[in-house]
Amino acid sequence: MNVLWIFAHPEPRSLGGSLRDEGVHTLRERGDEVRESDLYAMKWNPVVDADDFGSAAESDRLIVGSTSKNAFRTGELSADIRAEQEKLAWADAVIVQFPLWWYGMPAILKGWFDRVFVKGFAYGVQRPDGRTARYGEGALAGKRAMVVLTAGAPEATIGPRGVNGEINDLLFPLQHGTLWYAGMSVLPPLTICGADRVSAEEYVAAAEALRERLRTLSTQDPIPFRHQNGGDYDDSLVLRDELAPGRSGIGVHIL
Ligand SMILES: Cc1cc2nc3c(=O)[nH]c(=O)nc-3n(C[C@H](O)[C@H](O)[C@H](O)COP(=O)(O)O)c2cc1C
Image (cartoon, rainbow, N blue to C red; front, side, top):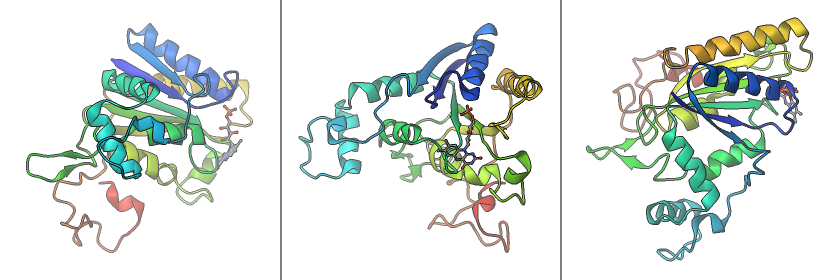
């Protein structure tokens, strides 16, 4: 497989950095091709800028969405964005690794998605029937994605009734709203909890859990998110009443 490993941590000697090294080594050892986007090491610019989209010659409107659409079609995107898109196009699977910061991803990683997942590349693709291809369909369909994260919180607190909420709820914006939205199949995340106080034994267990998940990267069942165009949603993209009756919230979008 061709695997793109996206890593968002400022310190390569951190727990996250060690796990990244383990993971990349594991993949290469079994014959996978690996390319990396180490965002801090690359000094990735996370801030969307008008310069990202070249000259707005086709439109004088200063609206990022419309400008980015034009820029992708006319090949005017910044070189750093195009390089990341080329890696994504090459990849069969993408690992997105980060420490959980304030219930989400570090800003540098959010800015990677903001700048790289532009209209026409990651979304905004029309199906032949005129519907928009998203949530399970779209430009990045056929690729797999898996989140690998470390979190300071103990495991129980990221459990079903834990104070931090469930991990798939915390990751809903990334896993459902970004990766699945763009068409990617999202594997269950690997979360290393209690990451601020990891003993030697716990590190060995975490590294083995990561290796196991990577060995089965191409065969694991993805999270069964509902397809937008699979019949579960009405024309307003609201889940039909007869599905998950009486329930609401994030969980209803998973079969
Ligand atoms: C700015 C910041 C915000 C954090 N927010 C959270 C959080 O919301 N939930 C959590 O469980 N841990 C949180 N943590 C703890 C980190 O997740 C933890 O320190 C990290 O995953 C440990 O891995 P590392 O040694 O590779 O950095 C936060 C840490 C920092 C620095």
